[in-house]
Figure 1 (tube, helix red, strand yellow):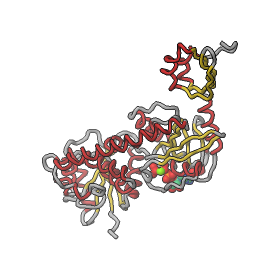
Figure 2 (cartoon, rainbow, N blue to C red; figure 1 turned 180 degrees about the vertical axis):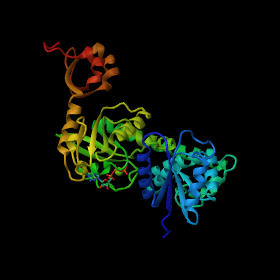
Figure 3 (tube, rainbow, N blue to C red; figure 1 turned 60 degrees about the vertical axis):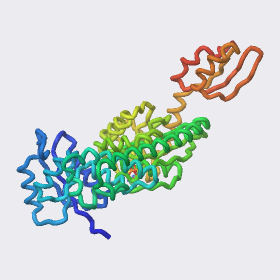
Figure 4 (cartoon, rainbow, N blue to C red; figure 1 turned 90 degrees about the horizontal axis):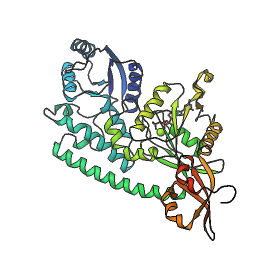
Length: 409
Ligand SMILES: Nc1nc2c(ncn2[C@@H]2O[C@H](COP(=O)(O)OP(=O)(O)OP(=O)(O)O)[C@@H](O)[C@H]2O)c(=O)[nH]1
Ligand SMILES: [Mg+2]
Protein backbone atom coordinates (compact mmCIF):
# COMPACT_ATOMS: atom_id res chain seq x y z
CA UNK A 1 0.00 0.00 0.00
CA UNK A 2 1.15 3.49 -0.81
CA UNK A 3 2.24 5.49 2.22
CA UNK A 4 -0.42 7.94 3.43
CA UNK A 5 0.17 11.28 1.74
CA UNK A 6 0.77 14.09 4.24
CA UNK A 7 -0.96 17.34 3.46
CA UNK A 8 -0.27 20.84 4.76
CA UNK A 9 -2.98 23.49 4.36
CA UNK A 10 -2.46 27.08 3.29
CA UNK A 11 -5.58 28.91 4.44
CA UNK A 12 -6.18 32.43 3.16
CA UNK A 13 -8.21 34.49 5.65
CA UNK A 14 -10.79 36.13 3.43
CA UNK A 15 -14.32 36.84 4.59
CA UNK A 16 -15.73 35.49 7.84
CA UNK A 17 -16.17 31.79 7.11
CA UNK A 18 -12.54 30.86 6.64
CA UNK A 19 -12.52 28.79 9.83
CA UNK A 20 -15.34 26.53 8.60
CA UNK A 21 -13.62 26.30 5.21
CA UNK A 22 -10.41 25.29 6.95
CA UNK A 23 -12.06 22.57 9.04
CA UNK A 24 -13.80 21.27 5.96
CA UNK A 25 -10.44 21.07 4.21
CA UNK A 26 -9.16 18.81 7.00
CA UNK A 27 -12.20 16.54 6.51
CA UNK A 28 -11.69 16.65 2.73
CA UNK A 29 -8.06 15.54 3.17
CA UNK A 30 -9.16 12.59 5.31
CA UNK A 31 -11.89 11.67 2.85
CA UNK A 32 -9.24 11.60 0.10
CA UNK A 33 -7.18 9.18 2.18
CA UNK A 34 -4.52 11.74 3.11
CA UNK A 35 -3.19 12.79 6.53
CA UNK A 36 -3.48 16.38 7.68
CA UNK A 37 -0.18 17.64 9.06
CA UNK A 38 -0.58 21.37 9.78
CA UNK A 39 -1.67 24.75 8.50
CA UNK A 40 -0.47 28.24 7.75
CA UNK A 41 -2.88 31.19 7.62
CA UNK A 42 -2.69 34.60 6.06
CA UNK A 43 -4.99 37.56 6.24
CA UNK A 44 -5.64 38.71 2.70
CA UNK A 45 -6.83 42.21 1.85
CA UNK A 46 -6.07 41.91 -1.82
CA UNK A 47 -5.38 38.76 -3.80
CA UNK A 48 -1.85 38.72 -5.20
CA UNK A 49 -2.39 37.78 -8.87
CA UNK A 50 0.90 35.87 -9.01
CA UNK A 51 0.78 33.85 -5.81
CA UNK A 52 -2.64 34.58 -4.23
CA UNK A 53 -1.11 35.13 -0.77
CA UNK A 54 1.94 37.32 -0.15
CA UNK A 55 5.40 36.21 -1.25
CA UNK A 56 6.84 36.91 2.21
CA UNK A 57 4.36 34.47 3.74
CA UNK A 58 5.28 31.86 1.14
CA UNK A 59 8.97 32.21 2.02
CA UNK A 60 8.01 31.71 5.67
CA UNK A 61 6.00 28.56 4.84
CA UNK A 62 8.91 27.28 2.77
CA UNK A 63 11.13 27.60 5.82
CA UNK A 64 8.60 25.79 8.02
CA UNK A 65 8.47 22.91 5.57
CA UNK A 66 12.22 22.87 4.92
CA UNK A 67 13.62 19.38 5.12
CA UNK A 68 10.20 17.76 5.32
CA UNK A 69 9.97 15.59 2.25
CA UNK A 70 6.84 14.22 0.68
CA UNK A 71 4.50 16.86 2.08
CA UNK A 72 1.89 18.08 -0.37
CA UNK A 73 0.50 21.59 0.00
CA UNK A 74 -3.24 22.15 -0.25
CA UNK A 75 -4.17 25.71 -1.08
CA UNK A 76 -7.71 26.01 0.30
CA UNK A 77 -9.23 28.00 -2.55
CA UNK A 78 -9.24 27.91 -6.32
CA UNK A 79 -5.93 28.74 -8.02
CA UNK A 80 -5.18 29.70 -11.57
CA UNK A 81 -2.61 27.48 -13.31
CA UNK A 82 0.08 30.13 -13.03
CA UNK A 83 -0.64 30.69 -9.34
CA UNK A 84 -0.25 26.95 -8.74
CA UNK A 85 3.09 27.00 -10.58
CA UNK A 86 4.36 30.08 -8.77
CA UNK A 87 3.42 28.78 -5.34
CA UNK A 88 5.01 25.44 -6.15
CA UNK A 89 8.24 27.20 -7.22
CA UNK A 90 8.26 29.37 -4.10
CA UNK A 91 8.02 26.20 -2.03
CA UNK A 92 10.99 24.45 -3.67
CA UNK A 93 8.96 22.74 -6.40
CA UNK A 94 6.73 21.05 -3.88
CA UNK A 95 3.48 19.45 -5.10
CA UNK A 96 0.65 21.98 -4.75
CA UNK A 97 -3.06 21.25 -5.22
CA UNK A 98 -6.09 23.48 -4.76
CA UNK A 99 -9.48 22.82 -3.12
CA UNK A 100 -11.20 22.04 -6.41
CA UNK A 101 -8.59 19.46 -7.39
CA UNK A 102 -8.97 17.82 -3.97
CA UNK A 103 -12.77 17.63 -4.21
CA UNK A 104 -12.53 16.23 -7.74
CA UNK A 105 -10.11 13.63 -6.42
CA UNK A 106 -12.59 12.46 -3.74
CA UNK A 107 -15.32 12.24 -6.33
CA UNK A 108 -13.00 10.14 -8.50
CA UNK A 109 -12.35 7.77 -5.59
CA UNK A 110 -16.04 7.38 -4.73
CA UNK A 111 -17.67 7.05 -8.14
CA UNK A 112 -19.10 3.55 -8.48
CA UNK A 113 -21.50 3.39 -11.41
CA UNK A 114 -20.46 3.97 -14.98
CA UNK A 115 -22.55 7.15 -15.05
CA UNK A 116 -20.87 8.44 -11.88
CA UNK A 117 -17.44 7.69 -13.32
CA UNK A 118 -18.23 9.50 -16.55
CA UNK A 119 -19.56 12.52 -14.64
CA UNK A 120 -16.38 12.73 -12.56
CA UNK A 121 -14.06 12.30 -15.51
CA UNK A 122 -15.94 14.99 -17.38
CA UNK A 123 -15.65 17.40 -14.45
CA UNK A 124 -11.92 16.65 -14.14
CA UNK A 125 -11.22 17.12 -17.83
CA UNK A 126 -13.19 20.36 -17.94
CA UNK A 127 -11.20 21.67 -15.00
CA UNK A 128 -7.91 20.62 -16.51
CA UNK A 129 -8.52 21.65 -20.12
CA UNK A 130 -8.10 25.42 -19.79
CA UNK A 131 -5.20 24.75 -17.45
CA UNK A 132 -3.22 23.02 -20.17
CA UNK A 133 -2.71 26.27 -22.05
CA UNK A 134 0.79 27.65 -22.41
CA UNK A 135 3.05 26.14 -19.82
CA UNK A 136 1.02 23.08 -18.95
CA UNK A 137 3.66 22.07 -16.46
CA UNK A 138 1.41 22.54 -13.42
CA UNK A 139 -0.13 19.19 -14.18
CA UNK A 140 2.94 17.11 -14.67
CA UNK A 141 4.18 18.50 -11.40
CA UNK A 142 1.26 16.77 -9.68
CA UNK A 143 3.19 13.55 -10.17
CA UNK A 144 0.59 11.04 -8.93
CA UNK A 145 -1.24 10.67 -5.63
CA UNK A 146 -4.00 12.92 -4.36
CA UNK A 147 -5.19 15.34 -7.00
CA UNK A 148 -4.34 13.14 -9.93
CA UNK A 149 -6.56 10.13 -9.44
CA UNK A 150 -9.65 9.24 -11.36
CA UNK A 151 -10.99 7.56 -14.41
CA UNK A 152 -9.00 9.85 -16.70
CA UNK A 153 -5.82 9.50 -14.66
CA UNK A 154 -3.57 7.98 -17.29
CA UNK A 155 -4.64 10.52 -19.87
CA UNK A 156 -4.16 13.71 -17.91
CA UNK A 157 -0.86 14.49 -19.53
CA UNK A 158 -1.88 13.88 -23.11
CA UNK A 159 -2.66 16.75 -25.41
CA UNK A 160 -5.53 19.18 -25.50
CA UNK A 161 -6.92 17.79 -28.72
CA UNK A 162 -7.42 14.38 -27.15
CA UNK A 163 -9.08 15.97 -24.11
CA UNK A 164 -11.43 17.97 -26.31
CA UNK A 165 -12.40 14.82 -28.16
CA UNK A 166 -12.85 12.90 -24.91
CA UNK A 167 -15.07 15.65 -23.40
CA UNK A 168 -17.36 15.52 -26.45
CA UNK A 169 -17.53 11.74 -26.30
CA UNK A 170 -18.35 11.67 -22.57
CA UNK A 171 -20.98 14.38 -22.94
CA UNK A 172 -22.67 12.34 -25.62
CA UNK A 173 -22.71 9.20 -23.48
CA UNK A 174 -24.11 11.13 -20.51
CA UNK A 175 -26.85 12.61 -22.68
CA UNK A 176 -27.83 9.10 -23.80
CA UNK A 177 -28.00 7.92 -20.19
CA UNK A 178 -30.09 10.94 -19.24
CA UNK A 179 -32.60 10.26 -22.05
CA UNK A 180 -32.99 6.71 -20.82
CA UNK A 181 -33.63 8.01 -17.32
CA UNK A 182 -36.25 10.49 -18.54
CA UNK A 183 -38.16 7.62 -20.13
CA UNK A 184 -37.92 5.79 -16.84
CA UNK A 185 -39.17 8.71 -14.80
CA UNK A 186 -42.06 9.33 -17.17
CA UNK A 187 -43.22 5.83 -16.48
CA UNK A 188 -42.89 6.62 -12.80
CA UNK A 189 -44.96 9.79 -13.06
CA UNK A 190 -47.73 7.72 -14.55
CA UNK A 191 -47.59 5.49 -11.49
CA UNK A 192 -48.22 8.70 -9.57
CA UNK A 193 -45.96 8.03 -6.61
CA UNK A 194 -44.69 11.42 -5.47
CA UNK A 195 -40.95 11.89 -5.29
CA UNK A 196 -39.27 13.04 -2.09
CA UNK A 197 -35.60 14.00 -2.41
CA UNK A 198 -33.05 13.93 0.39
CA UNK A 199 -30.72 16.80 -0.35
CA UNK A 200 -28.25 18.75 1.71
CA UNK A 201 -24.74 19.36 2.81
CA UNK A 202 -22.31 16.46 2.62
CA UNK A 203 -21.89 14.20 5.69
CA UNK A 204 -25.07 15.44 7.40
CA UNK A 205 -26.69 11.99 7.47
CA UNK A 206 -28.85 11.85 4.32
CA UNK A 207 -27.99 8.22 3.63
CA UNK A 208 -28.46 7.30 7.31
CA UNK A 209 -31.92 8.87 7.15
CA UNK A 210 -32.67 6.99 3.93
CA UNK A 211 -31.77 3.76 5.73
CA UNK A 212 -33.76 4.67 8.84
CA UNK A 213 -36.89 5.43 6.81
CA UNK A 214 -36.74 2.65 4.22
CA UNK A 215 -34.16 0.08 5.34
CA UNK A 216 -32.41 0.74 2.04
CA UNK A 217 -28.99 -0.45 3.22
CA UNK A 218 -27.07 2.30 1.38
CA UNK A 219 -23.57 3.31 2.44
CA UNK A 220 -23.40 5.64 5.45
CA UNK A 221 -19.93 6.80 6.31
CA UNK A 222 -18.19 9.55 8.21
CA UNK A 223 -16.60 10.98 5.08
CA UNK A 224 -17.36 13.75 2.64
CA UNK A 225 -19.07 12.77 -0.60
CA UNK A 226 -19.55 9.11 0.37
CA UNK A 227 -22.67 9.07 -1.83
CA UNK A 228 -22.30 10.01 -5.47
CA UNK A 229 -24.79 7.84 -7.26
CA UNK A 230 -28.47 8.37 -6.55
CA UNK A 231 -30.58 5.62 -4.96
CA UNK A 232 -34.37 5.41 -4.96
CA UNK A 233 -36.56 3.41 -2.55
CA UNK A 234 -40.27 3.18 -1.85
CA UNK A 235 -41.45 4.88 1.30
CA UNK A 236 -44.89 4.56 2.85
CA UNK A 237 -46.21 7.34 5.05
CA UNK A 238 -49.75 7.23 6.46
CA UNK A 239 -50.83 4.81 3.76
CA UNK A 240 -49.49 6.95 0.90
CA UNK A 241 -46.65 5.71 -1.31
CA UNK A 242 -43.68 7.88 -2.13
CA UNK A 243 -40.34 7.38 -3.77
CA UNK A 244 -37.46 8.59 -1.63
CA UNK A 245 -34.19 9.45 -3.33
CA UNK A 246 -30.76 9.90 -1.79
CA UNK A 247 -28.17 11.73 -3.82
CA UNK A 248 -24.83 13.54 -3.88
CA UNK A 249 -24.26 16.14 -1.14
CA UNK A 250 -23.12 19.72 -1.42
CA UNK A 251 -20.33 21.82 0.05
CA UNK A 252 -19.42 25.52 -0.01
CA UNK A 253 -17.57 26.41 -3.21
CA UNK A 254 -18.52 23.13 -4.86
CA UNK A 255 -16.60 23.27 -8.12
CA UNK A 256 -18.77 24.55 -10.94
CA UNK A 257 -17.61 21.73 -13.23
CA UNK A 258 -18.93 19.18 -10.74
CA UNK A 259 -22.36 20.79 -10.50
CA UNK A 260 -22.43 20.94 -14.29
CA UNK A 261 -21.33 17.31 -14.72
CA UNK A 262 -23.76 16.06 -12.09
CA UNK A 263 -26.68 18.01 -13.50
CA UNK A 264 -28.37 14.89 -14.84
CA UNK A 265 -28.05 13.13 -11.47
CA UNK A 266 -29.32 16.18 -9.63
CA UNK A 267 -32.26 16.50 -11.98
CA UNK A 268 -34.14 13.85 -10.03
CA UNK A 269 -33.78 16.03 -6.93
CA UNK A 270 -34.60 19.26 -8.74
CA UNK A 271 -37.79 17.74 -10.16
CA UNK A 272 -38.99 16.18 -6.92
CA UNK A 273 -42.40 16.90 -5.36
CA UNK A 274 -40.91 17.63 -1.94
CA UNK A 275 -37.31 18.06 -0.80
CA UNK A 276 -35.98 17.27 2.66
CA UNK A 277 -33.09 19.67 3.28
CA UNK A 278 -30.84 17.85 5.74
CA UNK A 279 -28.31 19.77 7.86
CA UNK A 280 -26.18 18.89 10.87
CA UNK A 281 -27.61 20.29 14.12
CA UNK A 282 -24.12 20.36 15.61
CA UNK A 283 -22.59 22.18 12.63
CA UNK A 284 -23.08 25.50 10.88
CA UNK A 285 -26.60 24.55 9.78
CA UNK A 286 -27.61 28.01 8.55
CA UNK A 287 -24.70 27.97 6.10
CA UNK A 288 -25.52 24.36 5.15
CA UNK A 289 -29.15 25.19 4.33
CA UNK A 290 -28.08 28.28 2.42
CA UNK A 291 -25.48 26.34 0.36
CA UNK A 292 -28.05 23.65 -0.45
CA UNK A 293 -30.68 26.14 -1.52
CA UNK A 294 -28.35 28.22 -3.64
CA UNK A 295 -26.79 25.21 -5.39
CA UNK A 296 -30.21 23.72 -6.16
CA UNK A 297 -31.64 27.08 -7.21
CA UNK A 298 -28.83 27.45 -9.74
CA UNK A 299 -30.27 24.30 -11.34
CA UNK A 300 -33.82 25.67 -11.42
CA UNK A 301 -35.18 24.13 -8.19
CA UNK A 302 -38.43 25.74 -7.00
CA UNK A 303 -40.15 22.94 -5.07
CA UNK A 304 -41.47 22.98 -1.50
CA UNK A 305 -39.00 21.80 1.11
CA UNK A 306 -38.84 20.85 4.77
CA UNK A 307 -35.76 21.81 6.80
CA UNK A 308 -34.49 18.86 8.82
CA UNK A 309 -31.84 19.13 11.51
CA UNK A 310 -30.18 15.76 11.98
CA UNK A 311 -27.74 14.51 14.65
CA UNK A 312 -29.81 16.12 17.41
CA UNK A 313 -28.46 13.45 19.76
CA UNK A 314 -25.14 15.34 19.70
CA UNK A 315 -26.59 18.70 20.72
CA UNK A 316 -26.77 19.74 24.37
CA UNK A 317 -29.71 22.12 24.11
CA UNK A 318 -31.96 21.09 21.24
CA UNK A 319 -34.52 23.64 22.53
CA UNK A 320 -32.31 26.41 21.23
CA UNK A 321 -32.42 25.12 17.64
CA UNK A 322 -34.62 27.03 15.16
CA UNK A 323 -38.30 26.17 15.44
CA UNK A 324 -38.94 26.05 11.69
CA UNK A 325 -36.88 22.86 11.45
CA UNK A 326 -37.82 19.24 12.20
CA UNK A 327 -35.33 17.89 14.73
CA UNK A 328 -34.27 14.29 14.29
CA UNK A 329 -31.53 11.78 14.91
CA UNK A 330 -31.45 9.38 12.00
CA UNK A 331 -28.89 7.24 13.79
CA UNK A 332 -30.93 6.89 16.99
CA UNK A 333 -34.27 6.84 15.20
CA UNK A 334 -35.52 9.96 17.03
CA UNK A 335 -38.08 12.38 15.57
CA UNK A 336 -38.88 10.21 12.56
CA UNK A 337 -42.61 10.17 13.31
CA UNK A 338 -42.55 13.98 13.48
CA UNK A 339 -40.82 14.06 10.13
CA UNK A 340 -43.38 11.71 8.62
CA UNK A 341 -46.28 13.88 9.78
CA UNK A 342 -44.56 16.93 8.33
CA UNK A 343 -44.28 15.07 5.02
CA UNK A 344 -47.95 14.07 5.10
CA UNK A 345 -49.17 17.55 5.92
CA UNK A 346 -46.95 19.13 3.28
CA UNK A 347 -48.74 17.00 0.69
CA UNK A 348 -52.19 17.31 2.28
CA UNK A 349 -51.97 21.11 2.28
CA UNK A 350 -51.01 21.08 -1.35
CA UNK A 351 -53.70 18.90 -2.87
CA UNK A 352 -57.48 19.15 -3.05
CA UNK A 353 -59.95 16.42 -3.89
CA UNK A 354 -62.62 17.64 -6.29
CA UNK A 355 -65.52 16.62 -8.48
CA UNK A 356 -65.43 17.95 -12.03
CA UNK A 357 -68.04 18.15 -14.70
CA UNK A 358 -66.90 18.37 -18.33
CA UNK A 359 -69.51 18.85 -21.04
CA UNK A 360 -68.69 16.89 -24.21
CA UNK A 361 -68.20 20.11 -26.16
CA UNK A 362 -65.46 21.14 -23.69
CA UNK A 363 -63.53 17.88 -23.78
CA UNK A 364 -60.73 19.28 -25.95
CA UNK A 365 -60.16 22.10 -23.51
CA UNK A 366 -60.27 19.67 -20.58
CA UNK A 367 -57.55 17.48 -22.10
CA UNK A 368 -55.33 20.49 -22.57
CA UNK A 369 -55.26 21.03 -18.79
CA UNK A 370 -55.84 17.50 -17.50
CA UNK A 371 -52.16 16.77 -16.92
CA UNK A 372 -52.42 19.10 -13.90
CA UNK A 373 -54.62 16.60 -12.07
CA UNK A 374 -55.00 12.96 -11.24
CA UNK A 375 -58.31 11.31 -12.07
CA UNK A 376 -59.53 8.93 -9.40
CA UNK A 377 -62.84 8.10 -11.03
CA UNK A 378 -64.52 8.93 -14.35
CA UNK A 379 -68.12 8.39 -15.39
CA UNK A 380 -69.73 9.04 -18.78
CA UNK A 381 -73.19 10.61 -18.46
CA UNK A 382 -75.65 11.83 -21.06
CA UNK A 383 -74.27 15.31 -21.14
CA UNK A 384 -70.62 14.89 -20.31
CA UNK A 385 -67.96 13.45 -18.02
CA UNK A 386 -68.16 13.36 -14.25
CA UNK A 387 -64.74 13.08 -12.74
CA UNK A 388 -63.38 12.69 -9.24
CA UNK A 389 -59.81 13.90 -9.05
CA UNK A 390 -56.92 15.17 -6.96
CA UNK A 391 -55.37 18.49 -7.95
CA UNK A 392 -52.32 20.32 -6.74
CA UNK A 393 -53.67 23.63 -5.40
CA UNK A 394 -51.47 25.77 -7.61
CA UNK A 395 -53.26 24.34 -10.65
CA UNK A 396 -56.79 24.98 -9.34
CA UNK A 397 -57.25 28.08 -11.45
CA UNK A 398 -56.51 26.08 -14.61
CA UNK A 399 -59.49 23.80 -14.06
CA UNK A 400 -61.79 26.26 -12.31
CA UNK A 401 -64.28 26.13 -15.14
CA UNK A 402 -64.90 22.41 -14.65
CA UNK A 403 -65.34 22.35 -10.88
CA UNK A 404 -68.72 20.90 -10.07
CA UNK A 405 -70.89 23.07 -7.84
CA UNK A 406 -72.48 21.38 -4.83
CA UNK A 407 -75.93 21.70 -6.41
CA UNK A 408 -74.83 19.16 -8.99
CA UNK A 409 -74.15 21.44 -11.98
N1 LIG B 1 -24.45 11.22 16.07
C1 LIG B 1 -25.09 11.03 14.94
N2 LIG B 1 -24.42 10.69 13.84
C2 LIG B 1 -25.11 10.51 12.69
C3 LIG B 1 -26.51 10.69 12.62
N3 LIG B 1 -26.89 10.48 11.35
C4 LIG B 1 -25.78 10.16 10.66
N4 LIG B 1 -24.69 10.18 11.45
C5 LIG B 1 -23.30 9.89 11.08
O1 LIG B 1 -22.85 10.88 10.18
C6 LIG B 1 -21.94 10.32 9.21
C7 LIG B 1 -22.42 10.66 7.82
O2 LIG B 1 -23.63 9.98 7.56
P1 LIG B 1 -24.15 9.72 6.06
O3 LIG B 1 -25.53 9.20 6.19
O4 LIG B 1 -23.15 8.94 5.28
O5 LIG B 1 -24.18 11.23 5.52
P2 LIG B 1 -24.53 11.76 4.06
O6 LIG B 1 -25.26 13.03 4.23
O7 LIG B 1 -25.21 10.69 3.27
O8 LIG B 1 -23.08 12.06 3.50
P3 LIG B 1 -22.50 12.07 1.98
O9 LIG B 1 -23.17 11.00 1.20
O10 LIG B 1 -21.05 11.82 2.18
O11 LIG B 1 -22.76 13.44 1.45
C8 LIG B 1 -21.92 8.82 9.50
O12 LIG B 1 -20.77 8.55 10.27
C9 LIG B 1 -23.19 8.57 10.28
O13 LIG B 1 -23.10 7.49 11.19
C10 LIG B 1 -27.20 11.05 13.81
O14 LIG B 1 -28.42 11.21 13.87
N5 LIG B 1 -26.44 11.22 14.94
MG1 LIG C 1 -24.68 9.75 1.61
